[in-house]
Image (cartoon, rainbow over all chains, first blue to last red; front, side, top):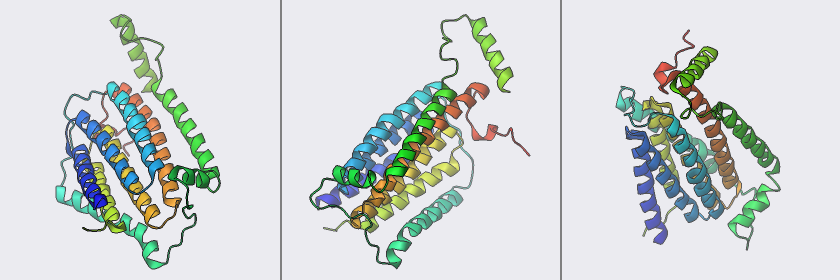
Length: 190
Length: 102
């Protein structure tokens, strides 16, 4: 009973938030709605008993990803309205639904066709975090390390791409200086 | 009251995935395209966690963790590229990115 109420409540909230994210013409509304949707999704993980995944969802998505988007949006002109493609809405919605159903079919097909057995069954008497640690640091140790290297590469790439000329203050120098740097930039880059 | 089963979660995942795909198909602004991509990844994560729970197998949760890690790194690189593009061209609309016209 409690599970059903929680599921339907959070399902409604998540769908509403993501619908706002996809349809609104204000980038800031989209950002805040997306952050709210991420938090609501973590509720599903808690309902499903994946406590650690829920905590990671909150920390990584609403803590790191949303903060990164917020910082990124400071570079862009977010106050003007977002233009959208003028296309046939029925085709778009139809294609999206078709593709989504196909993805779920891909997920479900192996479950339905054979008796799926658990490779790494849940350990009795251990909390979710403990189970995750047991599997992650034994069976999935190499992918874990590779993911760590990938995150390091992504961090270096982010710094290199976004951090150019961060030692110069564009607000403190005179207008001509700033324009000079800008012109030089364009010449180099174009 | 109804029992919540695996099918409920899969249907929810389908709906969220469809919303994300609609977003990808109708957005022109690249930042909002990124938002739609995050929705797709989250929809798949719900399916992974649900299957993991209903089959008593932790593999689904492991995959969800790696999906989250990939989403984070994709975002860091993508946002960096987007900032560079914005500094050069002053907008991030998809329609203006036609420098490779064939």
